[in-house]
Amino acid sequence: MANAVGDDIRINAKSISIVTGISIAYLILSYFLVGFKTDQLVLMGIFNVLFYASVVTRKFILGFTIFIVYWVIFDYMKAFPNYNYNDVAIGSLYHAEKSLFGINLHGTILTPNEYLRLKSTNALDVMAGLFYLCWIPVPLAFAAFLFFKNKRQFLYFSITFVIVNMLGFVVYYAYPAAPPWYIQFHGFTFHPLTQGNTAGLARFDKFFNISLFKSIYSKGSNVFAAMPSLHSSYPVIVLYYGIKNRLGLINWFFGVVMLGIWFTAVYASHHYVLDVLAGIVCATMGILLFNWVQSASANFNRFLNRYEAVIR
Image (cartoon, rainbow, N blue to C red):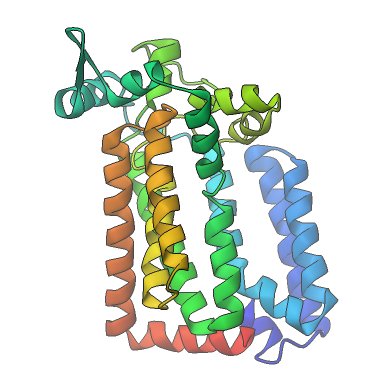
């Protein structure tokens, strides 16, 4: 799309036809792959409004196209359930978690999820819910900050974010895994059409008498994608680039959010400790992979230069 509009982001017949064509093609493809959803119209509406509104908004939405591509791929995963390609790890992952991180309570070995569920309190429920709500807003807000502060660092962060997600998606298909709450509600029997569940986050909704997390998890792409925990990956990327950009005290906030999300992933029974560790490894590998490609590939750097020129 960058080449279509040129470095000065001009609106002309060519750019209009390309943006319109992409928008229509996206809606048609989405209809056939995952069915019509109002979210698709909202996404295309936001993209088109910002593209045509002004030069500044045009550059902004073209920069954030990287995140839109991620969202579209994530959404399309619904059309290709990972459990169609490999067996889902249910009992094996549960027993591995218990073997490595089991907690002895009155002579019974519990997973950390099971133990924390017994120790839940309203204060922890509220804190955990607030931390988990930072999962997407904090990375996107940080990306917006970098967009206006340092376009090159924005691209580094955004592309690293997508690389980490792609690595996570590969593992999802290579090793489909049930989350801890699945065993709580369904035991060790595989049910392919299982819907998403708020699990421990339902206590947050109940405390405030809302259905916030219920609405979020009803849109999940795949229940059997617990390993790695990308919830745990995102704050690692944010903190890494926060430190890299020398943001000072704000990095302490990023660090607290990171630890809070890791805790909540286990506390709310959405992930095992093993999933969280896998998410941390995934983020680390994505960061290292990006840094290696960026330092070794002249073609990749030319792409970055071109993209930066488009959004500057």
